Length: 256
Image (cartoon, rainbow, N blue to C red):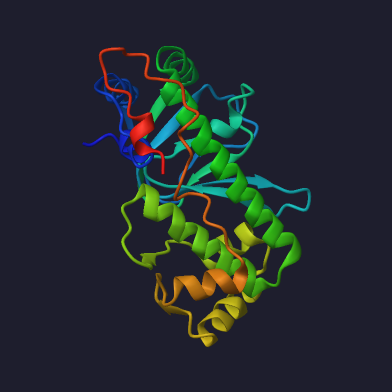
């Protein structure tokens, strides 16, 4: 199997042989989970991270009233549970949305990667920063916009993520989420999600067929809701050189 993390990072930077080998070494302990399986619960002691090889997952927290807030979704090549790296317990509950395959990785292995391959560590940091900004965009949308705009922003963000991590072509994709999942991600009830989806369809910019989402005019929908794509480009001109002096450093040739 092609390394999912290597594939993900290679979208931003050509990797050296040593860097690719280092990433593939992390992906040795394969685990498979069925849809709906909780991998780790919020508050549990946890020492590992996961690299997603296939499927969708989400990280969520429980609020004081017992409701759930989905913080973010994970796709192929994503590094999950990194939100808990500062502690020895999980800051959120990680759940499989669909059947998925993960590679389990001890936290210490990530530390060694940063030590031995600082350019990879810096790139992982940059990608993580872009994802944090995208999450902040979604939270701003939740706090300041109507339901239709929240749902549209969420769908555009999912499409943007899939373009990078899952080889998605075009603007049609399968959304293996319930309306409850959607609501928990954008702060709406199921009924409000349903109305918002119908309002989007009424604009002519979106079509649904079962779990298939088709965005008919990405540019128009992007302009309508003020969406910013945080995933398509990550600046690499500041990265340190590769630690392997026998390899070619591609930084200068890949900066736009």
